[in-house]
Amino acid sequence: MSNEQPLPVVLVGARGHGRWHLRNLRRLAARGTVTLAGVCELRPLSAEELGEGLGSPEQGSDLGELLERTGARIVIICTPIHTHADLALTAAKAGAHILLEKPPAPSLAEFRRMTDGIAAAGVACQIGFQSLGSHAVPWIRATLAGGAIGRVRGFGAAGAWVREEAYWQRAPWGGLRRTPDGRDVVDGVLTNPLAHAVATALRLAEADRETDIAGVGLELYRVNDIAADDTSSARMTTTDGTPVVTAVTLAAEQPGEPYVEVHGSTGRITFWYKQDRVLLERDGAEPEYSTYDRTDLLENLIAHLRDADVPLLVPPERTGGFMRLVEAVRTAPEPAALPASAWHSEPAEHGPRRVLDGIDALTAAGARQLALYSELGASWAGSTTR
Image (cartoon, rainbow, N blue to C red; front, side, top):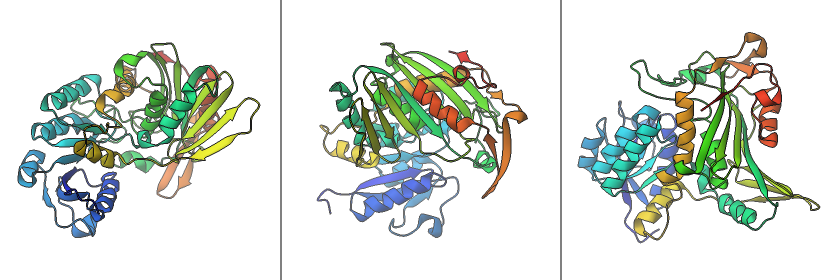
């Protein structure tokens, strides 16, 4: 057990993905690192939902009032995308440090408003791109700097996931580009479910700051009956001209592990970021597989608070490049609805799911060839550029 006193934490949004944070807090509470001082939810958690090992935290629906009651040092925000900025600013005003789930905000304007307020309050903020805690990331960066695969030509990311139609009813804001009253949400495949693919590729490219991106080309499509995109490709061009291409879908034929590929003149690196697994392929050499540990982002935030010399792994400014993509998606034309001839429906565990024929091969080809779907010859594909 640590000699340091456990830090009191308030969790905002404890259902849905918030259950993952409850499990992580339970792990850290058992080690004496944190205490769960409060839970901010519209409806209080039951004892069954809270589970064992977290004591009896205060509960309430008003974050500011809950912070006054608990004196929490850290706030974890795991709520709908369009609520992030206001909740983060409420935490910052109270002097609490923040772990904010991705995507950080639904627009660049909201992102800038939030980051300006956090900076003015002098609190620390970590954005929840967990893949950026992987120890594979600095290893890959060092390997590229050492010239192991020659001159880097570009970065490709692919993600082929399966989501049932019921997924889009998981919350009132699921699958929306904006709320009925006009607030931006931008709950598309690029910006939320497979956002890690984009953010990880940008970090490997050292192009994760807002000023690192020169332009964004987009192709946004939807198979499901939603407003946002569920199948999309994007080409982000860095200020030094390097392409970062992402091809993703939630209408896959088979569920797959998402990954990032780094293409060099004499080899390639593939990073399966959910597994912390890397494949190094070099001309004239045997393929080399390796796996890595990862640092939990809440633990990293706590370490930073206890020792300012420990850098945050994902401070807001290191997600500005990703926010350029979010802004491009937000301001792009509505996603194109693909014709029924392009997809079919299959039964699944919790109801039907829509499957886009041939999409698994297209996502892989997009990452491998650094190409958008229209450039790969998909009959249903066209392009928009922002």
